[in-house]
Image (tube, rainbow, N blue to C red):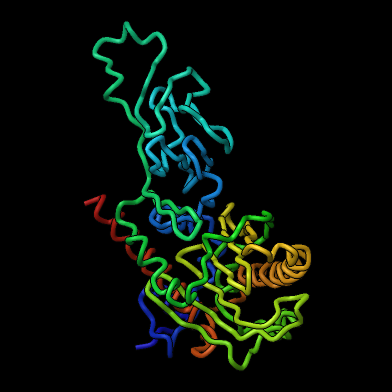
Length: 365
């Protein structure tokens, strides 16, 4: 039976695409939902944190964070990539303050405790009088880490899905395109007055493209625009037929990976997006631009056009956030043809909230 907008108590229940309504407004505007998102979604999912060139050699490291947990992504002397907690086991001091190259060890900036690149404690100054203290029993915790096509992901929760399922089908669809060979060129970020889920909703449908992005619409073929839904990712694809100064000819492939990573694959380039919640009704979107060898000359034009599209998206997302906060909105019906990606994302949000509620109930039994 399909839910109606008034089924407030059942909004978390699964909904079939053909009769689905959007998430209720409180999911985007209630401060309590920001905390729920951190606990139910971000703490339990894979997050894009770095690119492989940042951590190519032993001692290379990049600082990051998932759900408030500081991490340092570091390449060990053994060549293994690790995502260590960037929190000293003594009194929580920081180890790495910024990205770096060729470190021989990690040293706490508070009291000088020293750790090997695999997380083992090597030295603890003046701890000789601490009865029963043993250096060999102290080790930094580590998150799960995955290096894929030149990108580095990590997950705090052991129950997060296998990483291979997150990127299932992508390499086959790329047809031999070697994204790992693409070189990083630029980083850009935007702070936006909307909930992170508003931005993801917007990314996951081309329904708005003809009205919001006129120049992008000219480059894409809206009539041939398709959406493919997988278990943990969604692909939107469109043929390209634009001037060589823009995207040229070929295909635009837009992948979303649960919950907040986007991979925009265009001829000779890759753009990655991370959507990070900053608080109620606020998020930051971080873009990184990568180019295949010989394609770097496109960077300046790409930057201008990408900024134009982002400004258009920011304007509509912020307007939607105001509408959600107005008290007027009741969940509307989703378009099964054009919004299947939105539906898949929102079903996953519902499932994450259900699981969080079940965990909370189990904890008080």
